[in-house]
Amino acid sequence: MNNSKKQSMFTGKKGENYLFPFILVTGLFLLWGFAHSLLDVLNKHFQDSLFLTKAESGAVQASAYGAYFLMAIPAGLIAKRFGYKAGIILGLILFAIGAFWFVPAVGINTFWAFLLGLLILFSGLTFLETVANPYTIVLGSPERAASRINLAQTFNAIGWILGPLVGSVLIFKNESDKSIFELFINAVEKVFGGVQNTVQEISTIIEQQTDNSALIPPYVGLGIIVLVVLLLFIFAKLPEINADDTPEESAQKSLSSNLPLIKQKHFVFAVIAQFLYVAAQTGIGSFFINYTIEVKSLQLTEMQGGLLLGFGGMTLFAVGRFTGSMLMSKIKPGTLLGIFALINTLLMVVVTMNHNRFGVISLIMCYLFMSIMFPSIFALGVKGLGKQTKTASSILVLTIVGGAIAPSLMGFIGAENMSIGFFIPLFCFLYISFFGFIGSKVKVVS
Image 1 (cartoon, rainbow, N blue to C red):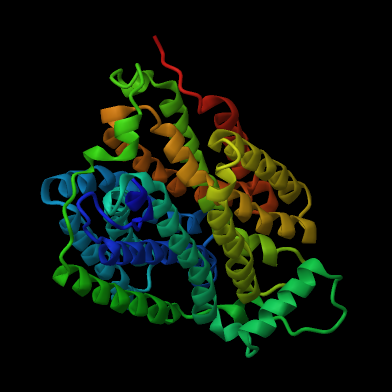
Image 2 (image 1 turned 90 degrees about the vertical axis):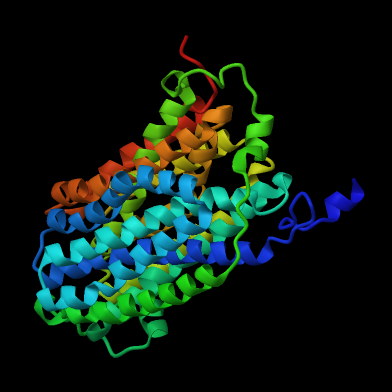
């Protein structure tokens, strides 16, 4: 017994060492986090380069997140039929194709060409997310499964930080000759300090427009990295482990586990909550830059808005991921989720009612409280479902399509004043708070 306690979280039942496979899989979490957050820069970029409205630019997220709706079930079936490694390799191939497609897309220079690339790229991410999440559960001792997932998710959060930083620097690179550090410090001074009286040269919208060729470096660079990772997975020996013996499935034997999912009220509520969470997170990220640069008193540039998103919002998101699991050892997950969602509801009230420095601060702070929502809703939704956990998980992956709807709706509502559009995530967080406090409790429809 004592020896088992001293075992690494990457040691299997028979002493197998799964550290290397886990490191490879964890790299996937970082890559898809980067690709996701890079969308938030693309949204504003296409508004300028292709003269799109806010509602039209929401098609960026619609194309990307729509891939989850189209590919989640096929990804699950292929992984189940051919194994983890096959699912990951196919996902990385699609990921690379979508990234490199941006080269001919720049030559075509029409919106549909870029959307096609995003659809292919995110089809690959659908495979990676469908496979990698359950794979981390089985790469080691069952009792340490939760720790492995949380560790992998922290690297996902790092990817979310890097996306807007790299994207802002490479895509909005022509708006200033200042260093990244100078731009970020200037932005922080404007948001958290008084209005600067110094004269700052602000380019007009036309002068700030960036050629779509600026998209080639980040996406080709990403494609090259994906190819390297693909080669590692092709030649690596990955164990195919039976996922039926996870801690959840062996321990969660409730009386209701054999009833249809539609009669599992907590699962039904979780499906709605996850759909709304992805909608809220995607919508906030899509128009973060729009919201910040429309605060006239701050006079922020697009690059500064992107840096506030990366260094500010996404860093808080990562901090929340690191600390969330520790808080859950003291507070019940449902209660903590309800509290965080309620705080974000109040923050969205500030964002919608005060389109000023306080609104920007609130928008940045909401990332801290969003951090635990996706994994918490997921875990609470599949609680007590026994053998139906895999089916329930596939359905919850489909809810990511919520990210395809919110941006266009927010862009339409906030066409004249972006702050109005944030009523959408306000409503989403209000429901998630209900789910955390009440809806997450396991109840069965008789």
